[in-house]
Length: 510
Image 1 (cartoon, helix red, strand yellow):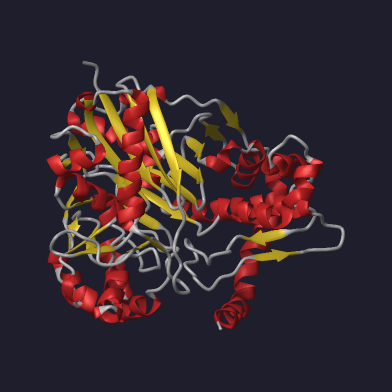
Image 2 (cartoon, rainbow, N blue to C red; image 1 turned 45 degrees about the vertical axis):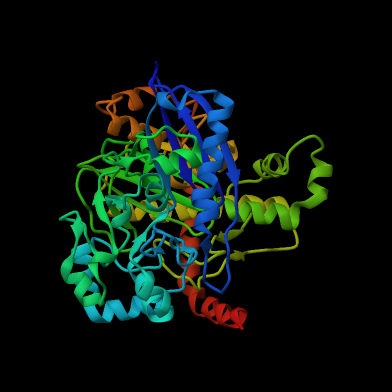
């Protein structure tokens, strides 16, 4: 029987699954949308039984039914997901509360301050290769201990989203090294293991967190109970899994130093491969999914989320009427493309849910600067696309400051389908982007990792050679020169407005 591989990705707003053959042809794919829960200001959560595991079981049954694939043909299963998330489990492996999401969840500000005081910011950076931020999972574990002590007392194990699904499939508890590296200050980036000193100084028990492995290492096999619930075959190997952004980088063959990916998703992320760990305050330094490689990256709290917000709130029926027969984004982009770079004097700060890297400020606020009565909704829409482009450039500059050479640069994600947006980002950053027209992204990377772990692949050459750019978007030097001036304004606006942003955040929270 011909072997095939299963890849699955848990995103912020959707889950995706696919089956591929060893030639990387897609046999079948499926997706499900979902939302997030925000029960308190600063809290962003997923219900793990419904979203992480529930959607996995639903999508896998759909893939098997539609493809009519014999489950025995599946040689391996790989899972990637949003990271880091924090989910406490009881002694039976059942969730004790909803999962706390990555840096968009900003509840643990006080715990960040405490850990910096107890351990010292320099020591944390030395051990973890990262400073504490809202992206850090360690402060959220401390938050759980301080704010929900009854739940904390019952907690036997803490896992992330991928680890939870893996545990449901295999009854094993593991965590990918890259995910673990976001559990600062508890993980030693140089030693690639949990750090006993950091646990002691944080007042936490190292037994709370599972064993760490590389993404392609087999975590376990599908149990009879999981097989009954999913339709998968008993004994199918399940690999440890990966961070979604790194799996996406892997999906375009991004395994060589300098390989870089722009992810145009709900949140915007940029990641670059490097040969050794880098310590860069403000952005993320992690192991890669590929053993022996590392990655440096950063992410905005919102990117595609802002275009969706704008289209839903302000574009409305008028835009659909003007662009008859076209989607709202298509029409907005067509009109915005007629406007000169800089949107005739507009700059948007894309901090509509605070700022992740490199500012790491949950009280930063979205700003539209330079409005006049001559500006239209299309000017504002273009300025939003440009604002995200400036955010990409800001993160990319931090990566470059870490002496990470930028080589091949890929554009993936739903927003990358926009020719205009890709051109704007290339012009702002000065880098050419290779766009894969059918970017399978993280699910493909996850499926490939399953192939490595199960022995279907013995290296990454197949993935590197299969990545073909449908089009290349070069930077236009003349437009880059214009954007250089606007980028200076972008960088100056935040420090000038920071205090007032914080005042508005406090007033808004009242």
